[in-house]
Image 1 (cartoon, rainbow, N blue to C red):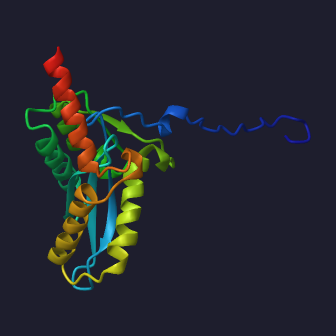
Image 2 (cartoon, helix red, strand yellow):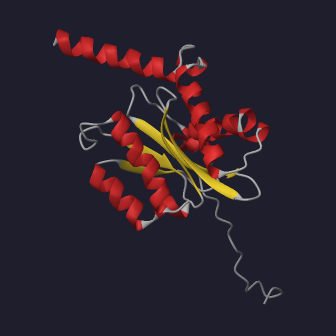
Length: 203
C-alpha cells in the first residue's frame, strides 16, 4: 500500500494553549482564589499527609487549608469552606468568586463541583500540563516546603499541623510580600477593606 501511495498520512494534532490560561488578573480580594494539594512527609509513624491550601490571588493571603491523612473531596472542600467562612461570612453567592484548581480527582469530583455551584463559586480548571494557570498556590507550596517542611522532621500529624499552622500565621501577618507592595498579605487585605468602606461612604 505504501508503494502504491494508498496509505493515509497521519496528522499530529497539537493542542493550542490559550494565552489567558496562565493569566491571573485579580484586582480585588475574593475575586480569584486558587487551590491545590501537595504531599507532606509527616514522619515514619504517619507516612505521607496531604495539604490543601486556598490562596487569594489579589492579596496572596492563605485563606483556608487542611492537612489530613487523605486527600479526598471531603478534605479539599474543607479548605474551601473554611476560606468562605473566614472571608465571606455573609455568603458567597453574590461575590462572583472564581476558584481555580488543577484537574486532580478531588477537584473534578461531582460532589466538589456541585458544592461550588451551591456556594455560587465559579470553578475554573487549568489546562492539562499547564501549572502556570495555578501559579500563585504552586509558588506558595514551594516556599512552604523550602522554608518549613524540608527543614523539619515531623514525628506526628499533630506536630506537622502545628508547625505548618505557625508558618501560615507568619506568612499571612508578618512577612512583607513583594507582589503586594511589600505589605503582608493580611495588610493588603485590610487596605482593600478600608478602601471599599470609604467608597461606600462616599456613594
